[in-house]
Length: 64
Image (cartoon, rainbow, N blue to C red; front, side):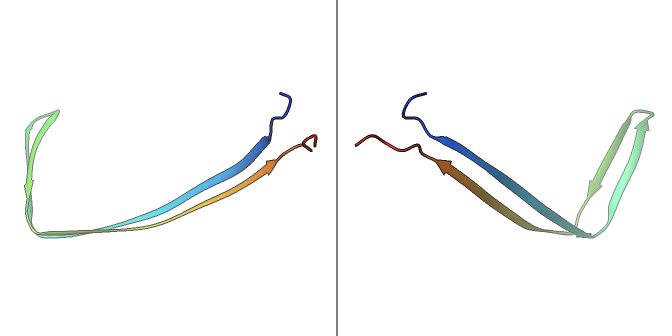
């Protein structure tokens, strides 16, 4: 494409998810493929993520 530019780049996403649950729960099998479950208490989740972007743009010489 005349007068166009070339773009290239990379993107990266890394995430760590931590979960913790404290409290009682009840699980009752109703049949072979169905289960009833209930619970209560404290649930805490933490997420650490890192996102990075690296891009390069090449523009050809423009006529003056």
